[in-house]
Structure formats: C-alpha cells, structure tokens
Length: 283
Image (cartoon, rainbow, N blue to C red; front, side):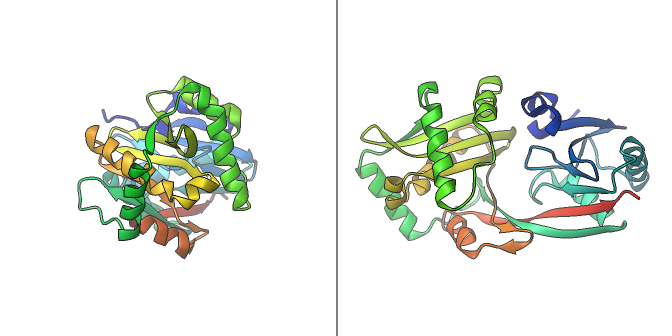
C-alpha cells in the first residue's frame, strides 16, 4: 500500500472540520468541500485534489466513481477538481487528467513552480548576492519558537495586506496545524539582530515533497530580499532530509500568469509545471 499524502488524510481533514471532507470511493479517497451546495470542490481546504488511490484508476473505475459521486450529491450540479502539479505522483494523477479530459468537462491550468532538489538549481546572481549579504549581516533562519508564532502570523498577514489581499488561513487553524501535526507543519523565521524580518510556513505533503504554504517579509526584510535566504535554507533542509521537491506554489490566477511573481520564483531556481483544473457536470 502506498504512503497516503497529507491532504488525503483524516488527520489533515480534522483541522478544517466540514470544509475539508475525506470520502471513500472504491479503492480510492477524495478530499472535497461542499461550502456551496451546487458546486463541490476537490480539494476542500488544501492545495492538491483529485482521487488518491494505490494504483491508476481504469476508465471503468472512474466511471463508477462519478456515478457514486452523483448519488452522494444529488443536488449538486458541478464537481471542480484541482489536480496536483504534473511532477507529483504522475503515475496516479496523469491518468486521471486524461480521463477527465475525455468526459464532458471544462479545463484550464495554473502555472506551478517547484525546485528540483536533485537537479542543478539556477539561482540568479542578484539573489546569490542578497543571500551573501544576509549572512554578512549575521542573518539567521531557523524553526520558530512557539512564543513567536503569533508575531510571525501577524508578519505574514501584514505582508499580504500590503499586496491588497487577506491571509487565507485564520489564526486558529494556523496554530492548530502547528500543534496537532508538528511532523507535517513547520514554521520558519528569518532574523537579523533578533528582529524577525521574514518567515515561512511549510507543509510536508509526503516523504519527498515540501510545500511552501506561506512566506513573506517585513519592510526591512523586503529591502534585504530575505525570502531568497529563506529559500536557500529550505533547499539545504530538503537536501539534508532527502526531500526531492520544494514546491513554491502557483504564479497564475484562473490561468493568467503573473509574470512578476513567475520571474521571482524562476530567480530562486524554480521550474514550472502545469496544475490542471477540471469542472465536471454532475447533471
């Protein structure tokens, strides 16, 4: 039996109550949210969706899944499935992408960025310079102490507010994730002169994949490009712990790429892959 990644486990679902449900279908499981009675989304409160199974689904098994799903959600008109990026368990999810493309579905893809730890990582000259300056300033990146959690949450929240958006995780879930699943969720702080100027919340999705759920900086950290130093530290952490992929998330919205954000991640050494989203009619 294959190791089940975090987003398809009940331990993760318990963090989010009814907004992230794990449903069993034959040999597989799917994580869904039913916040809107007409549209069911997979995943619920997670980044990757689709059906997790120990082997690729056949066309017949996938048809049975849709029939059973329609029976469980008779009042819903649409299932929206956001599959993982193409690097993630391709033997499980690429066949699903093909099967979804063959039925009555609408699709597009987001552009995801990840760092392949086992390949040559091409970090820009500017970021390498900023990383050296951070070290020369006696900068330090480490796991955050519990006493700093709220301060770091506020830093991440304020970082998003400066960009005109709200942080997508309430403090209560942020704290609960770190307390309940400490082997999966880790909070990192970057400091200079004991001042926290940057931070990241990472999620170990499976044994080989570390996902950056949030990262950000203070105004001082922005001047030092501290996220580049956080990235460098996470790359070293992955190497030391035999983690193959550092996932930096998507750089597009509804298929429209944010070129500035994409360039920022490329300069950290990230490469792109597609993250397909399918909308399936349940009628």
